[in-house]
Image 1: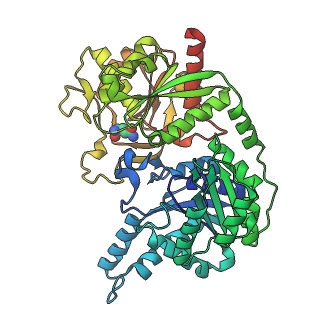
Image 2: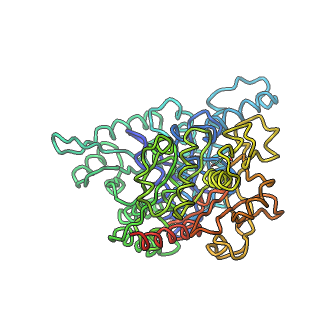
Image 3: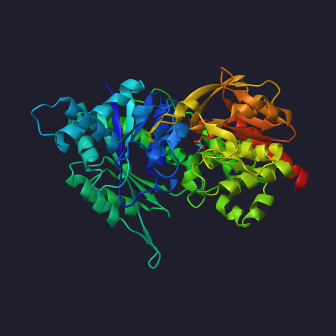
Length: 537
Ligand code: GLN
């Protein structure tokens, strides 16, 4: 029998519902249960893969190649588990399936309606997770905020689940915000009351309220929320903003959240949670550490969520090495105008992350050139690797016309070009080279020295690749192909021979970094940046 814990959001979005769900998942896992997490996203896109990061933040890629919401990154990092395609459901997927069934004639004679057809499809997809991931407790987070028109079918499905699987097998957690009124120095519970009322009008009574706040929440306030929202006082959990998100599981543990959930589900902990590693992580995070400065040169830098996994991966590496990684956000389009270079010059390492389209591309190429010429450690992630190859090509071939066909279709030197299997593809959604692929490391290379093993598997999301017609010419000038696909055809990692650390990967290592297990490439990169700091100060 699968148990369910549902997470809804109230008052405003972006209060940390995903981090809360991920933390609860960790605490339940630590009590000996097999857990999985699913995100239900009410937008009509089939997946976030076709959305601009400005709309939705980073697209997180899973082993199986699913392009998902960034909350799945939180789930994987906190719970240290690998999720699959069934863990992210959108309205678009649900409607596409219902309409396909209608066209096939599965409902012949019927009128297709939101209830029951759409809600049944949602419930069916919720039901899949337990089986697919062999989980005993499935955590389900609904995107957006209660009161949104789009989320109604999802909330109705959640309501029905209570009788479908049995009241005792479900727990509903509502995550809200207590706004602070500066003039009177007060936290306000009214928006929480209203959003709980809204939730109850849909037929869901929350069992627990997690109240996010920027200030400490006193007992009176908790009692008030309990009274007005009809939950037990111990089920009102204030969650005060913490400097480090990895502290949230420890806060929820102190508040007894997991024990309360298990009690509601009629379960008993199978073992005492071992959170020492997390406590040590938080201690390390809180300590004053020497700073190493990393310039992150991207085009979505205004929205830090666009590079969420990269930011976390840098942090993980810093924590392991005893350094505070300070990220300087540099807009690549600004570099093109000659602005923002102080940050690049002052950095001990440069990261160029993934991206699409030509805006700001010359700024990224200029940053790669700066790193190459000044021997500054450089880590290129997907597009960042391609940018590094373009710069190298301009240097090796002595022509500024060297480019990727993504940015200059008619370039005489297409050093980065479409993957052959991409040429016939017309649809944009879900058609890139996606997910986990093996990569053979070249013995003796920096990449091979970074990883503990010789064959690795990494997550991909791209259409373009290194053009093999330049392989020999560039190798002679000092480009090393330190990671190749098993058949040797695809360059998965490239690096410079004559450089302390200039490494680019066609895949996205950031997706596999974990708080207590930094990704080898990030670790090696930050190490190189620390060495640079020792040299230049
Ligand atoms: N735009 C490049 C490609 O499609 C890089 C993609 C990425 O950085 N994820 O190959």
